[in-house]
Structure formats: C-alpha cells, structure tokens
Length: 326
Image 1 (cartoon, one colour):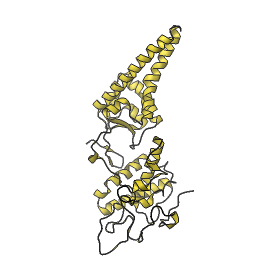
Image 2 (image 1 turned 60 degrees about the vertical axis):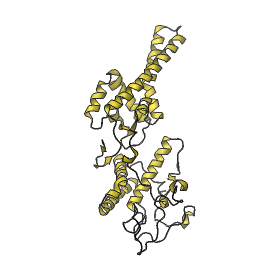
Image 3 (image 1 turned 180 degrees about the vertical axis):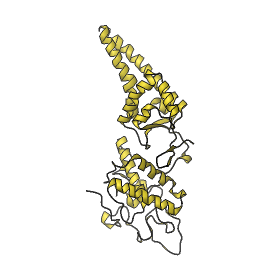
Image 4 (image 1 turned 90 degrees about the horizontal axis):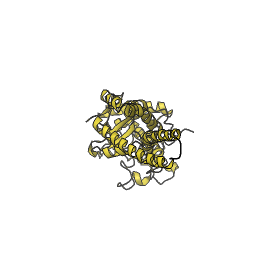
C-alpha cells in the first residue's frame, strides 16, 4: 500500500491517488466545465446580439474565467475537496495533515491549474506528478494539499480510540493555532498504533508528544491524566473544531461528544468506561490509555475512586488539576 511518511517517520494510512485516476477525474471535470461554458455562451450570445464586437469579446473572456477557473474553485471549496470528477473516481483533495481544504487551498490549486493544466494541456501537471514522490502537481505543492483515495477498505484504515468520557470538554479552551501539522500527524499515528508498541516505548513516546503539545498550546497536561488520554482528548477537540468549521452542524456539541454518543452501545459509559478501583484479586484487560495491569484509564497512583456520573455537577467529578486558560 502506498503511504505518506511525515518528517517524524510516521506513516499516514491515507493513500495518495495515482496519476491515471487523477487524470480521469480532471478530464471529467473539464468535460463538465466545457459543456457548461458552451451552453452559457450560446445563451449569452443570443441575449447580447445587439452589443458590439468588443463587448461580446469581453463577455466571452469573463465567462471563460468564471466557468473554467472560478467554477472548479467554488466546487472544491463548497464540497471540501470533492469535485464531480473526483467523486466519480473516489478521490478527494485534503490538506497535508489530512484535514478538509478551505478556500485558500482551492484558490491556489485553481490559479496554478490554469497554467499547468489548461495552458500547457496538462503536460506540466503530468511531469510534476511523476517527479513527486506522492504524485502532487505544482498546485498541490504550493497549496499544501494532496489528492487521496477515499474508497479504501475499512479494515485497513487506522482507528483512533476515543478519549475516556471523563475528559469530555476539558480542553475546549485550548489555543491550538500554534500546533504544526507535523505534530498532529505524529499524535494521530501514535494513537492508531499505540497498542502495537512495547508498553515502555509507547509510554515514553506519549510523554514526549504530550510535552511537545503542551509547549505549543501553552498549557501543561492536567495532573493525573495519562499522556495518551491527554493526546486523544486534545486531538478529538481539534477534530470537533474542524467539523464545526467545515459543516454547518454535526455530531459534536461544545467541542466534545455528547453523552449519548460517547456511550453508544455501552450503557452510557463510553468505549472505555469510567476509571475503576484496582483490585489485587482480578487482572482486568489493560486500557489503551492507562498503565498496563490495572485496567483503568489513568495511572495507578492517580485514580482510586470512580468518578461521578456524566450528568453530575462538575464539582462532584474527580478533579484533574486542570483549569482552561482564561
């Protein structure tokens, strides 16, 4: 499988699109744009037959720019990277960190695409894609984007475990603007593969990533919260903000999943349930975020009493020593 590899040598499971599928998607988009241009041109010419030749030429140029340049930019912006051709081929334009693109990304791709696709008949785009290790054309390089395959087997995609329910909403006040894309990638890939790592190595990696993340946000991790759980909670907060920004509404409320979402299929306790009291007679399975051996969602010396239910007042829940920045 073709993989993206970040500067931290972390493999990203999103698969870059191959040149043939990208070329087919571009041809489909161009065909739709040309058909729309011809139809609109016929209508405008019929409606402006009384104008002089200069005015008609100006209108033709304006329609060309609007439909063949502005049209793809608007479609990619509104569809978050999925034009008609890309949807037909199962492709999507995403940022380098895997997030949805915005208007500035679509604008850069569209403007540079005029030169490397329309003016050179795609020769420059093909050469750039063949030279690039990830198949990116010049527009993707300057925009910081990548065309990936959306239709991938579910079993081969990475799954990021959700954070414990008792961390819901604790990081809604963090300033995440200074966190680079490379660090987000490293965090995401660690969470998807932490159960495949040696426990000691995985714990040290989580501590290092948590330290780097705390340095970027300006707020240290709450006392008593395992570093992996801290990373998962902050990553979920970032994804919630991206979802609110990209869509008018979603399943997130207030930067955290609702109680019904977190506990779906588990009686409201979430995927991991609340921290439990450690007992020497039993050996429960290790939690993805806790210290191996106690089955809790926090280190051994951090939690000895179960937290209050989700619907209890905030003052009755176990304190983690964390206060959002003012």
